[in-house]
Length: 439
Ligand code: GDP
Ligand code: MG
Image (tube, rainbow, N blue to C red; front, side):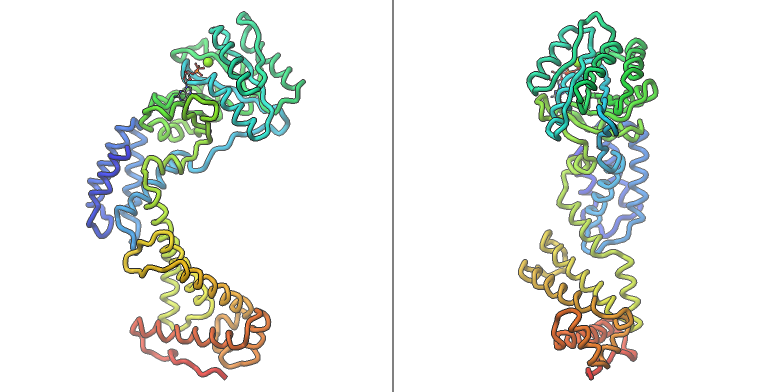
């Protein structure tokens, strides 16, 4: 997926802006890359359309190349596609929280049972596992061994009992022991069948679980999304756990599940060890797919600095010679942000390299200025003339901000100098641009 996308970005090298025409080829690459990653076709279609629309509509951010902009748009859409935020596990208001695991055979349910208990134990929760796979005697042993390994109790009965009955007695046992979280393992089949669904429905009725999580194998690609949808319709689930993401899965499952089924992926398994289970972070997943974390943070910072309306607003103010202390503050902050940005990235075209010491100095003087501006009345901020005319006002600001009168005078003078400089810069030579002498 990553290499397919790479060729998309490369096609934009040398372009000035994103246009309807020049994104056609890159979008074709993105589409192909997603399909090759086994993302389902309707999802790919929607994705490509949304990204295209946004790419053409996006304004030019100074210092950001079109390919970088497209990376950012694709990233943001990938994150959205995967549900945006992390979808946390839900816990019952009064314990025990019951988590029911379902899924086809061999996807990793029994392993997840133990992994999840291990994960929750680290968060200080007491757990109990219920062995509900009565069809394979080995499955009960498997869970017992894993439970022992992580020191979590396992409730089990003979293979001749019905899962729903085991669930009922297991839950009672957990309540008696004041267990925080009960996790129930169930039997899987090779394919979805009515027997499995009916059994799960029975177990669900008995347990009234807080979470019903479908365990799916990432290697099944877009099929994973279809499975989540079916299980959700049949028994009602709260989310999915994607296992075997450490294998050579092509990522299609991670990308499709939420969009197709409406249910979030809550956790992912990345290996066979007990510690190989973690929350599903859509942003990290997108980052891994794109493998371009540096470009993303760069574009983000640039957007932050160049927030369009800020800039436009400021320009209007400058043109009308109304540049006041509010704008002064805004502008100084913007410059300070640029400073820290160039420190992080050091690659903004047209901007001089700023040393860390310079950034620190700028931040320090910004602090001092902010203090003084905060001590001004709203009227003084809007009409700096008031301060220029009145030593008493300057004295008050100095006292309130704990600075000297000289510092305040300097700040006021600086503002008027800026007015003039900006007007000159813009070639606007009308009145209002003179620097008054301070009284
Ligand atoms: P079940 O039939 O759904 O209960 O599946 P199991 O828990 O018995 O797991 C089947 C096999 O998959 C076992 O060999 C596990 O060690 C392996 N497995 C489970 N989760 C993962 C994972 O995240 N990564 C890898 N590589 N293997 C896994
Ligand atoms: Mg099992």
